[in-house]
Image 1 (cartoon, protein in one colour):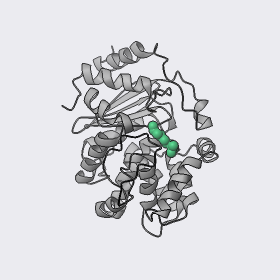
Image 2 (cartoon, protein in one colour):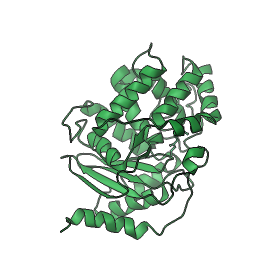
Image 3 (cartoon, protein in one colour):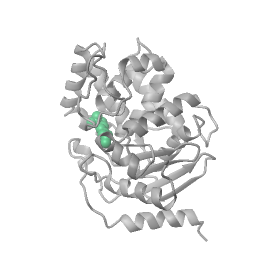
Image 4 (cartoon, helix red, strand yellow):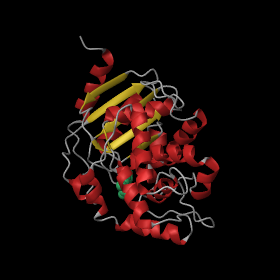
Length: 307
Ligand code: DON
C-alpha cells in the first residue's frame, strides 16, 4: 500500500503532464536538446524524510538555483558586511540577465540576478582565491547541502561558455565599476562551472530543507551554516528569487523560491520543508512552466502559502 503523500505527489504530476506550454531554454545549446517531457518533484521535511514522484533522480544542471547557495557560501567565507558592500538585496523587477546595478554604488541589485551572482561567485573563499578554489568551494558546499558528491556537467558548461558574451559583458561592466577586481574571463568561467553542477529534484529538496532547518542538513545532521545566514538567504529568495515575476510569485504561490534555466525550481518553507521540481519548458520569465504549476498546486492544496 502506498502512503498518502506519494500518491498525492503522483496525482499532482499526472494532472499537469498534459501541459506542454513554454519552451526549453535555447541560449545554451545543450539545454535546448534536453528531453522536454521530463517531470519530477520531491519534498524533504526538516526531519529529513523525502517524498518524491516522477523523474526524481534525473540529473540536470543547477543553473541559477546555484545562486542562493553560492551566496550563503560567500557570506560564510567573507562575512555579510563584505558581501553587502558588493551586492545589494533589493528586487530588480528585471530579467535575470539585465545589468540591474544600483545608482550611486553600482552594486548589482541582488545576488539572484546574473550580475549579482557573478559578483558573489568572485567573493568565494577569499581575496586570493583562484578559479579552481572558487569552483571547488561551490562543488564541495553544494555536496554537503545535498548529502552526496555532486559533479559538473562539462558539456553544458562548454556549451554555455561558447556563447557567454552577455555574462562577459556584464562582468566587464562590473570590473569598470570596481565591483569585480579580478580577471573577468576566469570569473565568468568559474560562475558558469558553478551553474553546471548536476542535481536532481531530490537533491534540491534536501538542499532547501537545510535552509528550512536554519542550516542543519536534515539527513546527515551536519550544521552547514549558521541560522542567521539561512534566514538571510531565504529572505533574499523571497524578495528576488523569481526576478521580474518575484511579486507575482510571492503573492500567488507564497513560497520563497529560485528557478534555473535548465527547468529546476527550488522552494523553501522555514521550519517545514524543502521542495524541488524539474520540467525543462520555461515560461516567458524563464521559470519552469510546469514547475510553477506544481508550486501553485502545493500552495493551494497543502496550505503552503507563507501568509
Ligand atoms: O548565467 C546564465 O545565464 C545561466 N548559467 C543561468 C541562468 C538561469 O538559470 C536563469 N534562471 N532562470
